Each structure stands twice: as structure tokens, then as C-alpha cells.
Amino acid sequence: VGRRINLPELRCTVCGAAGEGGWRCRCGGPLDLPEAVVTGVDRLSGAGLRRYAPFVPLPAEMLERVSLGEGGTALVAAGDLPGVWLKLEFVSPTGSFKDRGAAVLVASALTRGAAALVADSSGNAGSAIAAYAARAGLACTVFVPSGTSPAKQGQIRAYGADLRVVGGDRSAAAEAAIAAVSPETGSTYASHVYDPMFLQGTKTFAYECWEQLGRAPDAVVVPVGNGTLALGAFRGFRELLAGGLVDRMPRLIAVQSERCAPLAAAWASGEAVPAKVPPAPATVAEGIAIRTPARGAQVLAAVRSTRGCVLSVPEAAIAPAQADLGRRGLLVEPTAAVAWAAALLLSRHPAMAAVAVDRSGWRDAGVSGTMVVPLCGSGLKTA
Ligand SMILES: [Zn+2]
Image: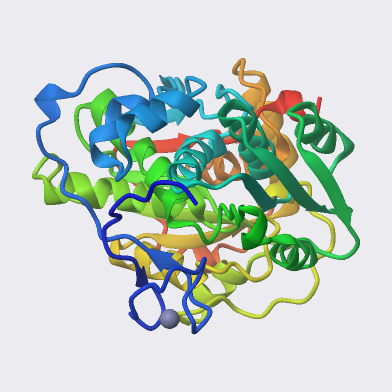
């Protein structure tokens, strides 16, 4: 049992109780850290995620030790859509934004003396955690549902992880992972959904948007399954706001695939918790097909507080959005095209001329000014 650091106090996002050392609250709710205040930015140095080490509650040398050069992704103008910017998260060491969270999560596990990690994922988070575990010299077991694409399974194996394919859906993989954790042998549950350190990594997305634009955008349009990027972006901008570095929050426009949209359904009916949705028919947006997002209530509250909204895009909009990005020189996987589909639909772009949308759920979605759309996962994963 290794050296421990003094983490700021963990609190349950559901009942408000203090954390007791487990990976979630006694009530089942996910835990979170208090928000930091971003100050002293004139002293920031270096590139990528490590630039923001002063705002991550870990020893900087631990982040340095596990870093694979994540973060620092380019922000490029969309060109024909004025004010719209694309943030190239797919240009990350394992090909997705999950590297931001995985770097911090694995550095935290290493700091706490973990000997082995157990994770569950539909693909990209598993790859990211496997890669950073390899970098840190930690053994790693990743549980994935049987529907995970062969290419993503191969990527996880390539990082030396012990890949276990579980029959059933995403939640069956999570249950198998939790059952496999054995504190006696030093293994720890490295959950990108529950571990609050993951959001300490994804919050750097917001810091970068702020530094690249010189201010906060008016809106961030983000694909949402478990919501780890949406919540990270929210936290990052809140911390910038607390530090007086931005004068308001960007509106958070969260986007789901209509074939698996528990948050969009909750939003449409004014509910504060994810709606119960039936087992989804297959969607090409496999990375966000999450029926029961554990931090779903947190996502809905975050979106509401920014006067944003949750949308769902038709399945028929995803492939044209992916193709449109390809013609802009940007190769992303289908899941990563979901937010772009929403951005094109919002701006009534000709690429979406053939796609019919029920606009009733889009009444809150009028977006003007500067919009950032992250492109979350590489098309090389599915090419
Ligand atoms: Zn609780």
C-alpha cells in the first residue's frame, strides 16, 4: 500500500455525503471533487495537459511520469460556418479525448499505490486506460461488451491489457469489472465514469479552448454518453469563471444519438434524472450508446445551469456528418460525428438537406456567436 496524498474532500453528487474511500458513495452515487479556482495563469508553462498540472490535485511529477503527450489539440475554424471551431481531440495518443482523463486517472492510481487496474469500457476509454497503465507499468484488465468492434478490442490488446469480452450490454461489462477488483492484490477499479480524477483530466479541454480563443466560446456542442467530456468541460469553465478569467459560462449543448437518448428524453420532459429507455437498436454511435449514465443527473444539471440543452440527432444524420468532416480533411469515427451532425443541423447546412428532424426538441437550441465542437475519436479506429 503506497504513499497517499491529501486529496481535497470527495463528496457524493447525489446525496452530498463525504466519500468514505470507496469508488462510489454508500448510496451508489458518483463522487466528485470540489471545483478549483484557476489563478496564476501567467506562470503556466509547457504544452498539452501537463501545462495545467497546477490545477490537478496530484504531484506534477506523477503526471509527467505517465504522460504520453496528451492534450494540446488543435482548434481549427470550420470555414464555411462562421464562428464554428473544431477541436481535434482525435489527434491524441490513443485516438480519443479519453486520453486526457486516463492520464490523470492512472497517475492518481499510481500515486495511491495501485498495483493493477481493472476497467470497463465500450472501447475508447478501455484503450486509453490500457495505454496509460502500460506507460505506468501497471497491469490492466479491461472488460468490454461483446458488441465492441474487433478493431477496438485489438487496440486494447495491443497495449498489453488483459481483455475480457463479456456477453450482454455495457452494464454487464461494468458488473464483471467490479467483481474482478481485488484490494488484497492491490487492484483498483479504474472507472472512467466513477473516478472523479477522470474529470480532472477532461477539464483541461476547457482550459485549452479558453487559451486558444482568448475567451470562452458562446457554446460547446459535445456528444454525450456517460458525459465525461461534457462534465469535464463544465468543470473547467467553472474553474476559469471562479478565477475571473472568463466572464460567463458557454452554453453546453449535449448531443445524443436518437437510438439511445436517455438524457435527451429526460431533458424534453423536464426530468432531473436520465429517462428509462428500452434496449436500443444498434446505432453507429456505439461510443455514446449508454442507457444508464451514472453521472446523468450531473450532466442534466450542468446543461441546465448553462442555459444549454440536450438534443438527439437522427441516425440518418450521423453518416452524412462523418462524410462532411472527411471532405474537410478530418477523419473521425461515427460517434465523433454526432456533435457535428447537430452543429450542421443547427446551422441548416446543405450537407443535412436530406435529413428530416423533429425540431420540437430543438426549441432551446438557437446558437449564435462562437461555437466549439470537439471531434472526439479517430476514424482510423473504424477505417
Ligand atoms: Zn451519496
